[in-house]
Image 1 (cartoon, helix red, strand yellow):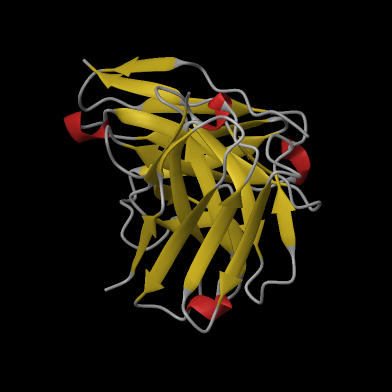
Image 2 (cartoon, each protein chain N blue to C red):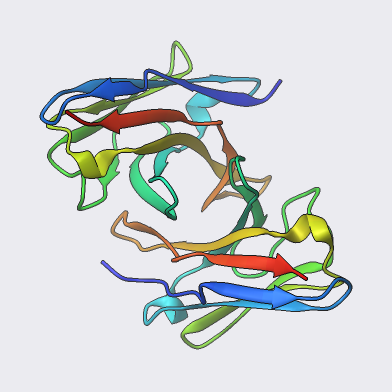
Amino acid sequence: QVQLVESGGGVVQPGGSLRLSCEASGFTFSTYGMFWVRQGPGKGLEWVAVNSFEGSKKFYSDSVKGRFTISRDNSKNTLHLQMDSLRPEDTALYYCARAYCNENACTDALDLWGQGTMVTVSS
Amino acid sequence: SYELTQPPSVSVSPGQTARITCSGDALPTLYVHWYRQRPGQAPVLLIYKDNERPSGIPERFSGSTSGTTATLTMHAVQAEDEADYYCQSADNSGTYVFGTGTKVSVL
């Protein structure tokens, strides 16, 4: 079954750290760019970070740059997001998502999403 | 970075056509993708690269662009189309942006 399953969310105090994981199954993980996207309570979607298929290219939104680190382990079909110096405004449902690729090429669209893991930053 | 602006809400009657716009100064040089998000669910890709449909997406969903505005059109709207809709784009510096989102109400 083609799916993404996130884990690692929870409640953390401001300034704390959390590490999210996303386990992929049913497809060749190592050939897809992977993303983290978040959604605050009652808010819209916000792109957080992207990692290229082989892991060398990483890009971050301005709101998390310098605090969050995206990484992947292609041998374990797993994507991670290390979140440090957390702030209350980081409170959100964090989704893992896959770049859309067809027989021709990969795109900047996201075609497979997990169900998300909730992160709450509060004292 | 850049911004993508959508109308907060669109109302449509069942069987009619709904159009959702996405505006941004950078759009003439970027592809736009569209997603539907039903309450409590993850987003679903509806349209990629302005006007392409992934397999499994009905033909009544279509996308178009003109200058700084992209449009998602939904024909023969059904009750199940009531959801939030987001546009999304990416530039060549590795920056991805989602639109502000549009809530579609089927009245």
